Length: 281
Ligand SMILES: C[S@@+](CC[C@H](N)C(=O)[O-])C[C@H]1O[C@@H](n2cnc3c(N)ncnc32)[C@H](O)[C@@H]1O
Image (tube, rainbow, N blue to C red):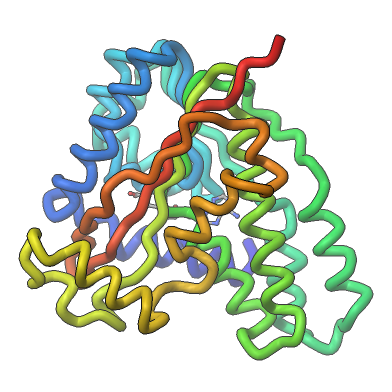
């Protein structure tokens, strides 16, 4: 496993004991997914499922006929189904893979940034291609859960924020992720892209600010540019609206109210976009 992915595995190990703290975050996401099962039905796919501390798998398995959990970290997925006592449930499927397809190349670039233009060009070309993922898609509902900020963090670690092509790489990773979500969603199906966008590490009051001031507090953070690279909620919305290439594939795009995710020692603010993939013909 490459060193960027080893870091993901370490993060998953460290955040594993936060089931209790994460209850509100989990209940909200599980609730949104239960609602989507009613309107879209059948088969659910979750990208970045990891420890699944944000999914109540028992409740979800009552409303979905199949649940496909996707992550690069096999130990986290196995832990999740054991911990939630669903490892024998035949409707739950685990898929261990790198969703970007360029993780190893990014890790190699991190080790040797002198690899230069040609390698970057190849990474960008791979990110722009459609990826066939062997995970029995498409699905009625696809949920990306707090993986996007991690994918972008891998670019930060690989290239460094001051690299002249950092922005281009970051945009390519974000666009690829949204394309992946849509490619995996059946026509007429639904998508839910959830992303953490700032943490108490840079926003110390995140935990304590009262609910009625939360939205205003987040606006202040965003306007002072205090958010993770590439995941400003407005930018996420812009991936599916207006002249964005993917906008014509989706309808009913809505930004859900932001919420707090308590990860024990750290808190995150989280944004979510819900949409429907257009049914053609
Ligand atoms: C912040 S965690 C998500 C939290 C998780 N849903 C939970 O509540 O336990 C992000 C997840 O994305 C996974 N991940 C990061 N990069 C990935 C990639 N390139 N392909 C597949 N999974 C990836 C990590 O292993 C991690 O489990």
